[in-house]
Image 1 (cartoon, rainbow over the protein chains, first blue to last red):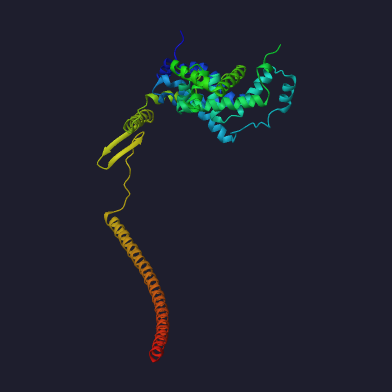
Image 2: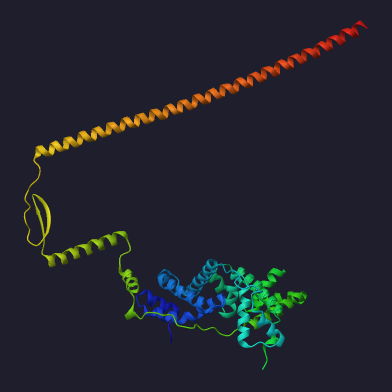
Length: 189
Length: 223
């Protein structure tokens, strides 16, 4: 039976640094996934992931409640994403006009979207959201966190999380509508 | 229930986090608000589209040093956990480390520590008594006297400079106030002159009016 996060953290704090490697193995894919969906870039996702674990390594001994580790690490990653967005001035990195028009036109004309194209378009659509809405949508849709967990990770009230989620989904619906992406365009042989 | 509350419940419903009681309330609300039901359907559709996104896997693993190949930073991180954190603890540890270093160095270089009437001395190897070639008491006293005299002269000079500086500043302040006073007097004088002129003019006007009134009354009484 694999050890829990809390047990690994306890071991790390007791000086068994190899426990940290297990924590990294367990959490690296999740943090990378969040950062990738946030930035739509593997390089930036990798950078955020590395920075997150460096911070975790330095500050883990300050964590009092080990059960709060998931919220804590997501919060670190979110803060790093936010800082990077501010630093690079990429609040709205991809405007609708900046989207690959050829891809959209072709997709709409054919009424068929390949899986790869769809992945690109979904990522592009996510980039249209505000950073706050985007992070909530990512955490809910792709990390399957509960609203309370997202609220703890972002340090905001649960009602705020729900409002951002609603606003994010509504905006995405508008974008998909505008791009003519719907169920019919998805499933084909 | 209003639309705002309903939308929060919609979110809970959409992600199966709604309580049974709230679900019932929402259902009732949706029956009376078809546009809200439409929204729910659209959000469901949006969700199903989002779920079509393929999984994302890191392209490369993070490089993590094995414990046996840990960096100096990692070693230091561990070492810090056994070091005292309080100021006193750190001081005591530093003192102990210095003593150990001194003892080790002493053992290596044949350290000699002696305390005699002449004072405390530390030497490496065999101790050589220093030849005394200092000043006599009279010479030392003369030097001390000279230094005291020089200090006294410097202090006197400094005090004079300070007094002169203060005097200059005081004179400047007095001059400033005198100028200010002269300006004020001039302004008061001007104001008084204007007031006097105005008063005289008013008296003249009053006299004229009175004269006209008396004249009119005299004419009326004659009639």
